Length: 292
Image 1 (tube, rainbow, N blue to C red):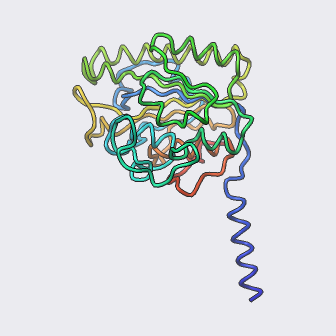
Image 2 (cartoon, one colour):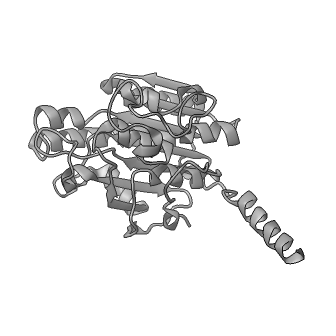
Image 3 (tube, helix red, strand yellow):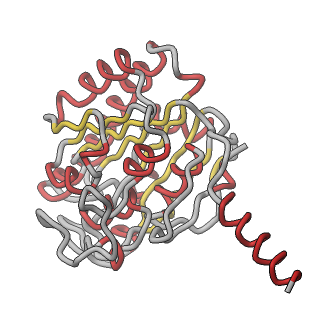
């Protein structure tokens, strides 16, 4: 009986301590480019993106969830779980499938939800172009959540960063997806748009520096899916493989990593960076190897 009690106590202690981690940085920024396929990295320069790659860790093999369209993949990135659990099995105004669990705000728990619950004083923000992002982030758990025109996103983000110095901020562009649909993936127009988006990333990085929080920040640049021809949604590697780049405080200068990464692992990595405990309904892994 005593042995059983001892084993129970050890197990209980392990559960209660799980997720109790040291916070890696005071400020974390996630910049997302919708429709950015890893395949294009052999054809674009993107100096600001490549500087982050040199300073930190990256993979070009982060795999999208199926179907390889926007809502399911942004949902998995923010919600830390696969489509079967989040309910976001396709695009739409609401999850096509009933989520396996909803929180008090009526949504599957997101990284924003976890921050609000476990770090209630933290300041969070989300600036996005595509309106479909709003139902995926738990806007009631976010201090500043606004839709913006693509030409205004960098400036509006820079203004907010310098004035508010947020703990966590997601900045989501709806390109190069538009160009992929109109002009085609793997085209000069697509590559040109990636260069323009890289310049926007440069503006955001400069704002972080001007806010004097760069040395205490982590920056992640990633995507929901790639594309082929004039579309996406299938199972080709051009559609399925997306970049994940992370650099900043307490991030190793480790270059390309070989560990398998899935879309939902983005949220788990963010949770570890914030020292958050993840809920039982999340399914995935943190890319713990990137942290010092």
